[in-house]
Length: 552
Ligand code: HEM
Ligand code: HEM
Image (cartoon, rainbow, N blue to C red):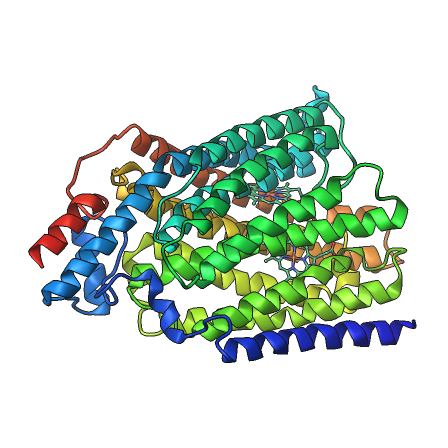
C-alpha cells in the first residue's frame, strides 16, 4: 500500500471512529445527559463553594464571589443531602491512609528529582561542578532526574489523587486498599533499585525506559496491585452514571500498564522498530497516562470548588474520545529526520495537528465554566494552581502540535527548546494541577488544616516565577541554538556558546522552583505532624457537614 493511501485510511478511520462515538453520545448510549455534570454535587449543593485549603473567613469571601448559597429548607431534601455527605465522608475515610502514603512518597520524589534536575542544570554551564564521582556526572544524574519525575513524583501524586477521588465519584468506599499499599511498596522498591542501577551505570539506553527490565517487573507487579482496588471499587459503585473524570482516570490506569508492558518485554524490539516503540511509549505515557489523570482532576476539582457544574458535558466527552483516538499515533514526531519510514512520521504529524480538537474542546469548556467566576482565583489557592495548570495544558499542547511540523522541528529538534516544552507540559500543566489537588485533598485526608496559609501563596509564586524564568530562558536559548546548528558557516561550538546565558537563567529559575518545592514539603510535613493552630474551619469537613445539615 502506498504512503498516501495509508495516511488517508488512517485519517478516515480516526474521523469515522470519532463520529461514531459522537453519534452514540447523541443517542445517549453513553449517558451524555448534561445533567450528568451535576453528579459530583449532593442535593442542593450547587452554588456552594468547597475549598478545604482556606480558613473559615477566607471561605466566606470565596462564597461571596459566587453569590449566596442556602441549604435546602425542605426536610426531605435536607435528609438526602445529609445522607450523601455521610457517604462522601465514608469514602474519604476509606481512602485517607492509602492516599496519604502515596502523596508522602510523591513529596519525597519531588525533592529528590528537583535536586537532581538542579545539579544537572548547573553542570551544563559549569562542567567542572561535582565531577569526582561517576554517578554525579551529567549523563547519570539527568537520567535519574527524569526517572524520579516520570516514575516517582508524577505517578505517586497521580495515584494518591486518583485513589482519593474515585470512591467519591462512585459514592462508595475504597475496596481493597491494602493491595494498593503493597503495590506502592513494590513500585517504590523498584524505583529505588532502578535509580540505583542508573547511578551505577546500568541502564537500557532507551529514554524514559532506562530502568533495566529485570527491575521493571517490580513496577509492573506494583502497578497491577495499585489498579486492583480501583477495579473492585468500580464493581461496588453506588452510582449509575460514570462522571467524565472516572472515564479519564480509569482509561489512564488501564493504558499505562499496557504501554509499559509492551515497551519492556525483553528481546521483542530491535533497530529502528525499537526506536519507534521507544517514542510510541514515550509520548503515550505523557498523553495517555499523565494527561488524562490531570484532566480528570481538573474536571472534578474545578466545578467542586466554584460550586458550578462544568459548562458542557458533551464537550468533555468529545475531548476524551478525541484524545483516545488521536494520541496513540503521535509518538513518531520525536523521530522527525531519522531513518524511520516517512509515512509513519507524516502520520504522527497529522495526528499531532488533530490533537487540537480535544485540546480546544477542553480549553473552551474550562473557560466557559470559569466565566464570571474568575474572581474566585483571588481567594482559592487550589483553584489558582488548577486553572493555571489547565491553561498550560492548552499552551503546551498547541505548542506541541506546531513543534511537530517538519519546518519547525528542523529548528527545535535536539535543542533546549524541547526541554522547555517538556517542562511546560509535565511541570506547568501536570505538576501544577497535582499541587492544586493536593491542597484540596490533604485537609480531608488528615482532618487537619494547612497550618500556615501564607506558605501556600509563597509556594505558588515561587514555582510560577521560577518556571517563567526557566521556560522563557530555555525557549529563546533553544531557538538560537537551533538556528546556529543549521547555519553551515558557523562552527558547532557557536551553537553551544550561544546557550550559556540561557542555561544559567534555567538554573536560576530551576533553583527558585526547587525552593518552592521545599516550602511545599515543609508545609506538608508540618501538616502531617499536626502543627499550627487548630482552627475550626473548613478543613474540618466532618464536623462542618454534620453541623450544616443539622442546622438545615
Ligand atoms: C497535542 C499535544 C502535544 C503535541 C502534539 C506534542 C508534541 C511534541 C513534540 C513535537 C515534541 C518534540 C520532539 C522532538 O523534537 O524531539 C515533544 C516533546 C515533549 N513533549 Fe509534547 N506535545 C504535546 C503535548 C504535551 C503534553 C501535554 C506534555 C506533558 C504532559 C508533553 C510533554 C513532552 C515532553 C516531556 C517532551 C520531551 C520528550 C523527550 O525528549 O524526552 N507534551 N512534544
Ligand atoms: C516536578 C518537576 C519537574 C518535572 C516534572 C520535570 C520533567 C523533566 C522532563 C520530562 C525532562 C526530560 C526533557 C527532555 O528530554 O526533553 C527533564 C529534563 C531536565 N530537567 Fe526537569 N523536571 C522538573 C523539575 C526540574 C527542576 C526543578 C530543574 C532544575 C533546573 C530541572 C532541570 C532539568 C534538566 C537540566 C533536564 C535535562 C535537560 C537536558 O537533557 O538538556 N527539572 N525534566
